[in-house]
Length: 496
Image 1 (cartoon, rainbow, N blue to C red):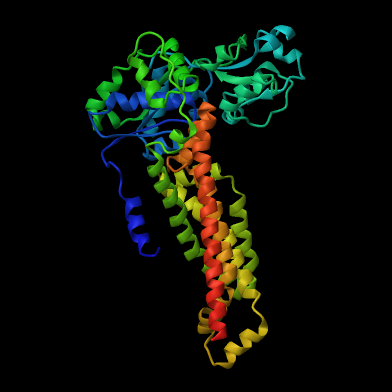
Image 2 (cartoon, rainbow, N blue to C red):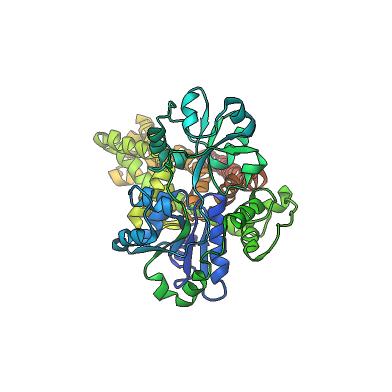
């Protein structure tokens, strides 16, 4: 393992394409597809990378400002309300004037307006005679299922509730893809939607009229770093040809191809050049999805995240555990600090690390996983050392060993079973936590889980979740085998 670490570190440090155009996208179907549209538009002209599913607006915008991506598809209303925190409905010129000090701009309006809206099942809305957002105020008993981003956005639930004086408490967040299944099953009454969602017609939803014109225009456009046209002039000219090419009908069609017809995001994006309705594609079976062409790549990325972060956490965690055991005054501070780190929500920590490191992908993910892995290692190291019986310590002292030699030659070997148990716990935890790293472009099995959630596709979701679970079981089994082998060797040495 120690011989592999320098090689793994080198692989992390090497960029895939130092001069590549890096395109980002958010974690919902339309953004995935638009990212693929942008990628295929410039592919063959320059090296290009698409980093899909980078979480919500805050994460992908932080990646843009940090220079980890060069551009991504965004909506004018989101730029105005969520990024620039301005009210009203500013035009492109106003947005560019406000973005220029940050080295950013908005251009290439793609041709459709994907506004936020609230929707209900048609039969439920008709029974309650609800047609507008104002009508909701007359029915305080309705159950809302809103996406996490809509709840937290300035142009989302807080402002909407105030503008319409809606008598509802803020609900718990519900993934956008899952909300459709929940409203179809009658578990919720109202959900937030995008006006180009493909499932509106399928689930027979009534889009409630925004009668007070609360929501601004959400024209799809490119949010980009201002140096992009100069760095990639040929690619930028190709992207400019997308101006006005995607109307609402075509966007709904592409969304439907991914969400309803089993096409991949890349296949859905290719429909931009196809006239007429898309052809239905057969959904993949589970095993073809599990062992798809990306399986080896995702496995390698996941193993890299888990084992490099685990090795670093051992290097840092064992000395911290020793310090906590040998310096009683520091014990509470050390254990308290690593305990608090464990309670920080993973996406919040990822967002903070993106801003801190100025990049997305592997580095912030490794740092986060390192921090999350510390608690079991530090705690078990401290517990193992403090649990050594007094007689063993006195025997080591009687041999005339110096304190440092007593620690590393006697006490740490005696505490090793406890330390290894902590390392095993950290390794298993890291396998699961590493799936979330896909939301900041670090890859791994989480890519499939994020795509499955966006599409509400259980096959794709399980194709990511099951390998992650299997990897956790394999790692746990390997550690337990090692512990038994270690115990057998210790007993054999004792008999000799």
